[in-house]
Length: 424
Image 1 (cartoon, rainbow, N blue to C red):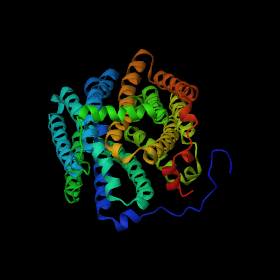
Image 2: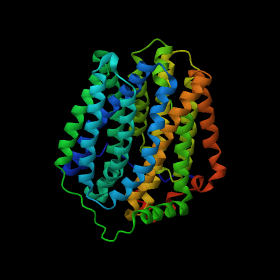
Image 3: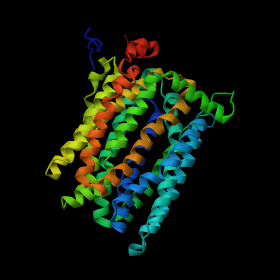
Image 4: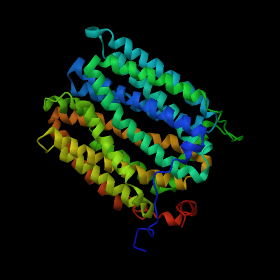
């Protein structure tokens, strides 16, 4: 065996068994795909509308700043609720709340020239809070409805679904904005939420199986104590946060499109990242042979930074797209190995609360990153923000090899549960 790799195995086509045999999973998959398309369209429309109203880098970046506090508060609380309540009910209630937020955006957009920024900011906070409450429950449903032997296939299908939604959804958003304004994108999102909620309603109940519940704060402290004992997992959180803090480019996309006089490219830039993710996810069979997952988390984080930095040096919108495709592929590789470390080694009884902590790690970084990118662009330029951020990301992630050797030395073979899952 070569160092860091398991012996090669025979890999077949994509395993569709969970979709063919599991009604519960089909409903979850369909709901996630539909709502992902709509949410991606709104994700494009909100910063576009703020940029259109204000023309300010900082005003767009504030969207990310406003979403940080709800992520911290409600993400942790959502993890506790996921371990206490019926998860289907939690998801259904939050889907309904999402619809209310999109209705507010829609009515504000219908005001035309009278549309204001503050309702967009309020809904951004609301959406962040709702998503933070929902996601731990949603992620914790899958292990309850999918048999253990189908979990690898379900994980691959979830990655494919997410990449597809992120690839097609922004393009739909950009097309709808060009066709009928931001209100068309918001209306599309509203329709998708109605469809998604109807699918979730058809799910069987997913009641909590734990009978002994301590005080919520004590349960959170238990999860954080576990993180302190797992510096490899802590390293995955820090790596992702640093990469997004220094090199998350989304707040700059409206201004990149304007700089290249290519309004059409706004939605395509978001899609380019997802194209890279899709390419990486559909060619990731090699990842099954990797045993040092942490090293690939760091390698991919550095590649993300280099790609974002390079996008500020090129001279064509098409080269920008190419850099973003590469960045998306790197992000998917990083996410794949982070999820392997989490899903193969975290005890089931901590899954909901750890999902809440995971939510913070991959959500706070991008929100702070939007502020960082916007402020740096104001002080320098759009290109300067991309280059500086990319270099800072590459350096910070690279330094983690020495700062957190537990992540670099992580070996999946040291965890019996993970080794059994890999069939070794």
